[in-house]
Length: 109
Image (tube, rainbow, N blue to C red; front, side, top):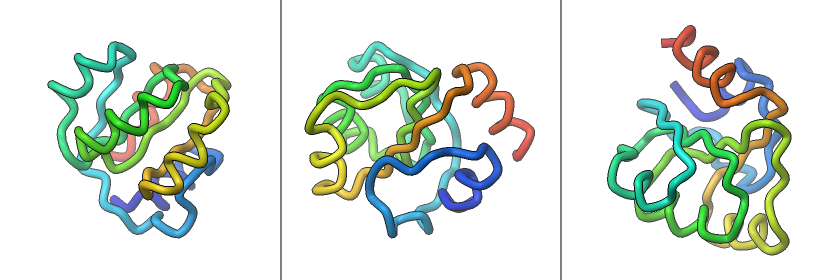
């Protein structure tokens, strides 16, 4: 599915990288330990996390995730949105829990 379809289905708020919603989402990964995500998330995954610091840009880039979804109303730290826009990393926000987001993703599969 396309990132734009995921955004619509899960009612996600776009935070960064507007215009890249045609990127393909092939899976889902949930994790907050950045080194763990780097080693286990697959290219094309939608990455669900509560991490909101600048390091999410590096991890999303290294893991080649389709997008990052910040769960539970988390707002990115200062500078994160700008960095993600510069690197074309799509970041969404949601008030839903990671479980609710993953369950919604699973229902789409």
